[in-house]
Length: 94
Image (cartoon, rainbow, N blue to C red; front, side, top):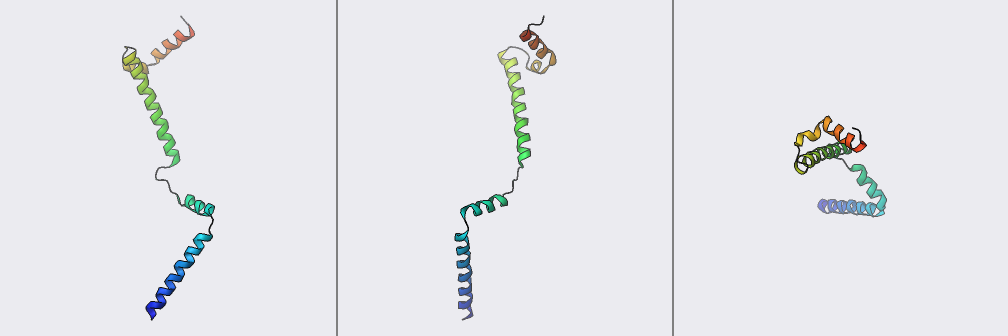
């Protein structure tokens, strides 16, 4: 008989929980889910990683463009003298 009572109590608890869930609005459930979210990879770190990747791809693109397409030495694309020469050509400074 005690087993039946325990079973009935358990069913009552589950029914109460179901009713509570139904009564909660959809927005409230979303808010709870958002609050519970934990990022394994913080947003500020994501931004730094993206910036680092952008800079890396820029450097690689410069080296490929100058070295492979432009028939120059790839590492020359990173030198200040090269860029000063390019700026002088663009601004027509002799």
